[in-house]
Every structure is written in C-alpha cells, then in structure tokens.
Length: 190
Image (cartoon, rainbow, N blue to C red; front, side, top):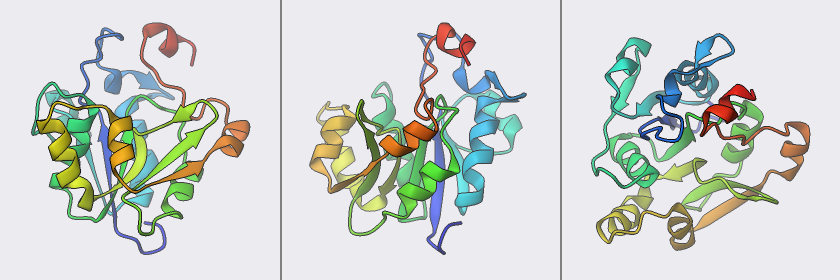
C-alpha cells in the first residue's frame, strides 16, 4: 500500500471480449494469464484486490469476484459494482486488457488523491477512464447515470470532480503504456 492510504484494487474483466473472440483475461502474457499479471501489478499497492467479472474460470486465481449489479451497461457497471462492494474510499480500477500499465503510473495517480472524486490519466491522445482511481462518494452519480441509460465514461468524468494526471512523459518512457488488447491482431503484436 502506498503512503498508508487504504486503496482497494479492481481488475475490470467483465467484458464480453467479442472483438477478441475469447476471454482476454485468460490470454497468456509473460508466461501468465493477463488476469494474473494484473493481479500481481496492483496487489503491492492495494489493501484488497478483486476482479469485476463473472467468469467461473477466474475462481482458480484465488481472487474474489464481483458480479455486475447492472447487466449490459459496459464498464460503468463494473466500476459501480466494484465501488458498491468496496470497503475503501479510494479504489484503483484497471482494465484487464492494458498489460503495459505499471507501478510508476499507479503511484503517479495515487500521489494525486485529494478532494477530487476520481483521478484519471490523460495524454495527447485522450483520457484513460479504465485505468484510474475512483472514490466511493461517486456511487450516487454513477447509479443515476446507469438508471438513466447513459453508460459513457467520458460523460461520467464530466459530472464528477475529476483530476487529470498528465501522462505524456510516462508515455515517452513507456510508449505502449496504455496499449489496449481488443483484437487478436493487438494480442499477436505484443
């Protein structure tokens, strides 16, 4: 855990992996399934780690699973369910399909906690709402968005007090930092 701040970590792995054609969390990366790789990345920084997803194959990883409380809403449902499940005020959310994220990025986000509702990486190409810190106080806003049918994370960020952390220098050091594995071609390129 960083700086005695109680943080829970959640790996967002509840997607359908429709573009990949197979469960991305179970793809091998550096001799381990992606899910196990992500667990090992965030475990040193978090008091508790769980996976937001419902695949029964994840049980073998010895990690708690948090099922979506709302179905067919995309990642916003995973974030909401994780926050509802969490005992921590601050919660690190990381998508299972960004294997090159690192502790340098996570520590940079954690060092920016304060009065904001969420801490999100940004760079010249956009923002990364699926790799960020979310405070539990955001639950009512997220639930209102879901029940109104608005599942866009960029809309959520605009409704919250969001602190954006400039990650352009980190990307210079780690060009594939936010590389997302969505299709088989993406996976084969790593």
